Image (cartoon, rainbow, N blue to C red; front, side, top):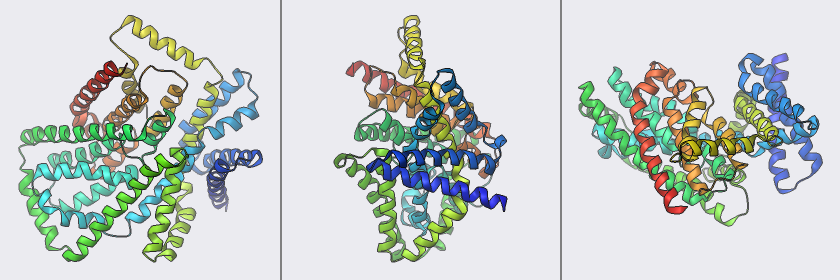
Length: 472
């Protein structure tokens, strides 16, 4: 009974906060904004009982730190709580809606059909690796870091008889690097959407730069994998061709396969294209536009497929069985909001700027864009996930005037986030991968990706510094 009460209270808080966020965005009423803040506090309160304080250390730590700072700055605590609980309202709405995209992806055998359709493009180890890195970025658009276990299971199903560290390197690095590169350009990745919005960067320029970096990273990953293949002395191509032939032998008819592949292409283009095009024509913040577009996109899919009854079942199941279990990330956002709002009442931003200028006085050839990725990477090794780090770093950068184009700041910060995902054994992507392949977080991270991450940093940072010279 107690657990049911806590779960119901937590779910009600999440739904109330989300609905009021979208309503008050278009029709701001002080009374409803206050109720939304109360719902935010309810999320933190009920999540503390749902998870237990020991399992909610980071969100509670951020939340309490924000309260302490408010107290030391003589800010009215009620006003401070109200401000802090609203600070990350856009991110809460986004995080509640984004997981719903996966509902559509589960409706058809999209992955199997794509492999069957493009098997001639995947019949060597290099082509297959390139396909895995690229396709993981596409799937991340729908599943976020859920793309890692899903793609791992799918690839393992194809390569079911290929065992050993060499094959785990082949699969694991492709999926981890693919997802890491996706955070540099994929619109539905909350950390990317947040930093673009908060830095007021051009969406098209940020995506183009991110895609260019991701394409280079994909090719660089292929170079490193070819080198490792020689070191392991394993013929990936021979084993791959044998396994793909067996998959094709059991695949569905060609007409059905082509239909499913076409449907996947339409789904991706309509979701990505509608968000991208609408961002130019409607005066709505990106972090609000994305979830609203996703909801309409999902409803349209089920209406067109004449499966509205199924949408109702899935939505009910999501609210009853899944929503409460996804509240940890929401608590992190609420805690981060409290901290960022409280720091706005201090001279923290001014001190950061003075610190940056002090470093540049000692090392005049170093600018802050060199340091931003390193800062993000270091925070990643302390267990802060990409979204949490992005919210904290970008929230601070928002209050600092930096003499660089915002698109370059976005690229620098997302570069750090990407490398953090590849290397840190204490954040979710590597933890999920290690749970799938049984290797240690250190091996999946630093050992397999260390030199690749260093090369990627050097090349992308070189581009950033060249652009700084050309644009300032």
